[in-house]
Image 1: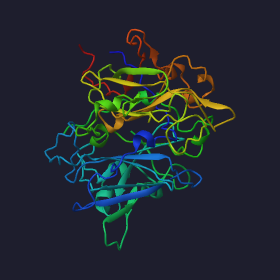
Image 2: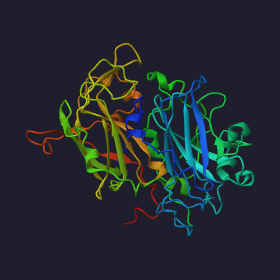
Image 3: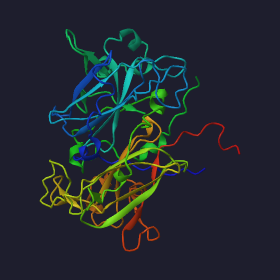
Image 4: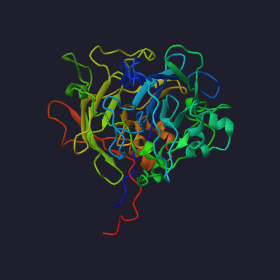
Length: 193
Length: 236
């Protein structure tokens, strides 16, 4: 069959919030749910300036490591009110956040297990197409060492850009910080998927 | 579990580069390191399907707000969401946003001195039907100036956001209108070097689906990434 050409990407532009911002879209679960955690950070450009017109989207498995999607044919349970998708538009200081649960481990290629991770799409004014990255968790040391995607990154400092750091000494909700650097010395690792 | 079948890689070459100097804002917002290739896992071949999302029929009609009609040229924008093999992509969420007929977005950052229209928000949503079809009723957006370079104007366009079946099929793009005199001067449109790929972002005027005494019709099909061919395909 002859293939049709794909529709190419174009920037979201500066007015993305008109359609892409909605109340509550950062909450994959309510804050009151047991195990709820806050994943937050800021988006920076190559000059260290914050990016106030970005939208971050995440996609993840549930706590059992099950994606709510027909191609995940594992026996793990789907949790009906856990969609696994969230969206957060950055504020004037470049902040985004999500309230979610840590995903379980999902299969990788070749009979492996991936470390708990969240997939991320980054869109912004000044970006002609999205950049794709992943968020891993600093308190999953063992699983992280077994993850083939993390292990495909040779440079330690680059690899560390993918690891959300757990804040210590916090009495309230568990918090993890994950900043996104679109360019520069601290540039986040982005993936070709 | 067997290995997931990858989504096509070659088609990604049609996207614009991360950095395109003509579009100045890309200069500091484009990664300098080469992205690292991930072989697709369950993470990439799954994605949000919005089964529980409640969408009103009225959300696909941007031309009326609270029973009041927006100013400007009423149009239909309709077509199909397909994959590279021409197969329809059903039940997929489509979100749009656009400026009004005068070229003004309903957004605090937009300071273009063109009138806002109280009856136009410029925001719409729909889910494609079983055949992958969608249809919006809206107002033809105007051109508007921007600060990229001296006398810079964007060609009229509607922003479209689509999900498709997987994280790997996510697409945000802009749909343009035929014969826009601004195409030649727009760095966002021209960030794509291949003319054939650029032309695929331009809708077609369609007299057959134009509604007499009511609305002009523009047709536009989206093509999302398809699956890589399996070794068994093509043996029929």
